[in-house]
Length: 85
Image 1 (cartoon, one colour):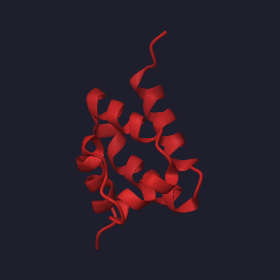
Image 2: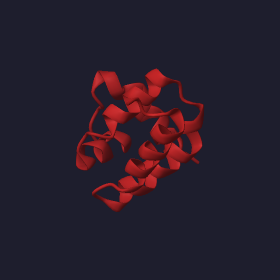
Image 3: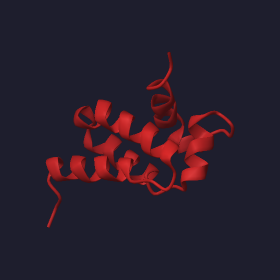
Image 4: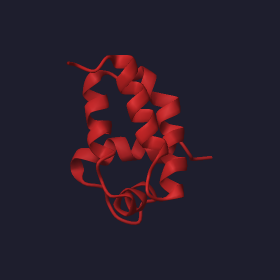
């Protein structure tokens, strides 16, 4: 049974909020709230894949401490820009 778009958005939102470290809860839940509804299926696939990564790695990528892997660079940049002032 295929997951509906609405169910997928809810699942990805929940996975964005329920991370291993609070910093990633904050960063990813804010990004998800602002962007998931407008994402196409391909971008959702990429975001879903990103959410499987380790929180410590994600945090270093988003904060620019370590370069993100090529496949995630654009998405990581979008997440980081969500919090630029």
